Length: 257
Image (cartoon, rainbow, N blue to C red; front, side):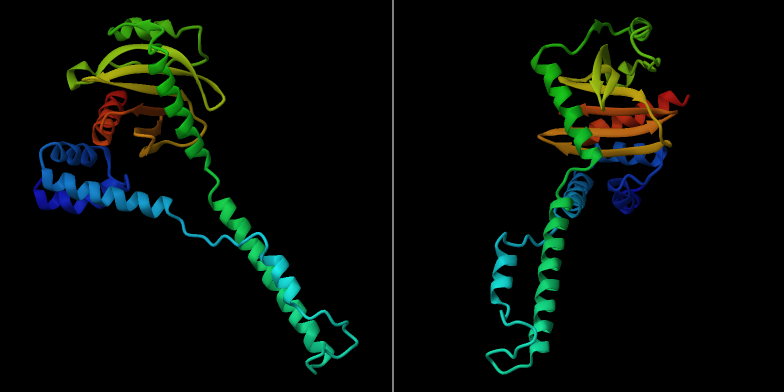
């Protein structure tokens, strides 16, 4: 695929709309093309800003009280001091009440928009588990590069059997596995290593449909998640995002062979 074709595919690559074959083609090209790397970084940064920098208006806490104090205080059956009919005062009171209600609604909407989504909460939980496994020096319960040793170790410890694949030929070395807890239930954690960077791959049963890879980041760590064959996969690491996407692409291809 030519350089110009890769440039045309970058927006869809950033939005994770490409198929597996095109995704891997773009990833291979990015490994060797500084110009496309810069363009990808700029598009990715813009996409993240659009998703995260939601503008909203936060009303001051005393605004409703100040609006109420500024309204005419005359009773409806009397004329106002300014000479306007009493029904005009009632109209202004209704307008002021509507404005205060609108401001409260806008303020509440601002609070709602800033609440983390379920995916954001799970991303933070997965990253915290990854960091904790490094700090406690507890990456593995079973340390082995042999997939035929790691996979049977989970038997009887979980109500599902995670697929364990050796990716050493592709540069992602299996180091073992462990039990972990994520999203309210036990999960399998497979540990791979890309050079000096450990990758925690969390696996547990899914209730929804298959979904392609989606990338995110927080606190200097990257997360790539996808759903396939009724299983959730969440990969977490401090390796470069394009490397983690490459890992997910290779793994997805390997699980469908």
